[in-house]
Length: 256
Image (cartoon, rainbow, N blue to C red; front, side, top):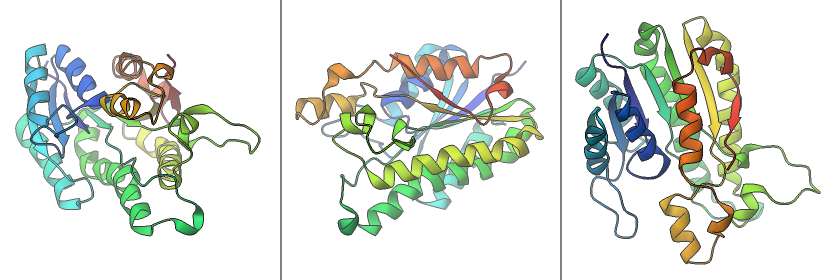
């Protein structure tokens, strides 16, 4: 049996990188996708470093520099995975745009709003469309979208949760992740008919490199977060499930 093949976005660091490495341990071929080709001045990680880590773990990998706001980049990512590995069995939409601050409605920048929707919602949709023929051919295709508890409906009187830990509610981020959850739920029936499961995973407040940096600046309390192993183990349990279709259309929540 040939090795399974995956695309993982946002894989230069954080949860995406750790997922790519875990897939490598299972012998996966992994298309490592992100914008970071050379290490960031203040955040460790690049797609090349992740490729090296995947191959050290026992898998095969290819680095693909991608700006997920660009439809041509998305098409190139899928084409590269197909040319390199011959198929796609797993698509992990992990990349997200969390910028834009916590604006009041009257101060909301529509450019920030559109950018976050492009990365958090439109890019996963375009990737699903582009990878659909290969995922269908796989006969056990799986799509995992990383979402957020910021998407959850919260009664007015309730305070706390991830949004409070991050300093308030980010309007575009919350709305785009809520849309991603409903999109997966609405797509699940038609994808089921093509043998493809789609599962959204809320990683919770996770101690990524970005959160560590925010903690140093005093923006968040890193002690309230859990390690990356918590959401990574949940995603890998979906990947390794004998019946991921049983979870299709659902949002699973990682708990530390």
